[in-house]
Length: 260
Image (cartoon, rainbow, N blue to C red; front, side, top):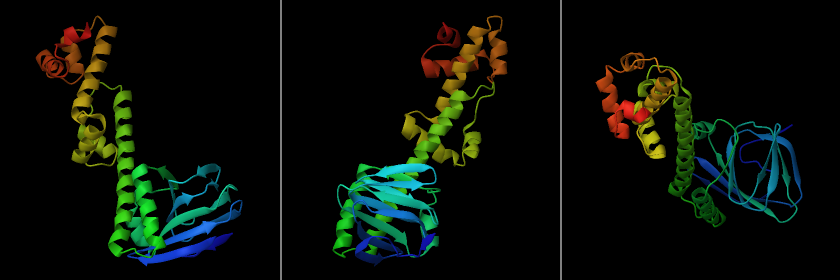
């Protein structure tokens, strides 16, 4: 199997620019051509400017069209099948030193394809600069930073989604704690709470309390012989007054009224 060294690509190279720690390459491919299984020594990005293709990685097959940004990890085996309709033009972004790339893109753990209008517009504009060889080191680092920031944002949204799902599915009597969730999901408590609030428009601690009281209400209604004082003790409240103050804050009523 062919292993492509840094800066080596299939297709016709239209323009190459070295700037900062990165190599930017505009290249074209003949419609209907096929790239058999191969791998690249360094990780890299490929942005589709024109044309389309199918790409096979293991058992996965993806279709790439203008606007898609594809990340390939180092030594990932893949094959490419270009469509016949029109010429294919891509912008490849590759690190000159793979260590610097890994540090900037720790959010990329495996092959990844994204489509986002902001990133797409940035890549299109940048491809125009590459074609004219007008790229400065500052512009080069700017596009890398924008891609990394976008991916970190997507990764963060995915993470808080998992946190919310965990809270929703949790069935234990003990109230979850922000610090424990942060440890579980490998995040700083303050950072996790900020992301959660930005995504779901409610603080993490308030959402935990709300779901906890929902579970208490379900238990209380399902077990009519349970006293309210026993319930509050089992679910971690100091007393009934403590529970009612929490309910009043969240729902504008005491616990008995909330359960009716």
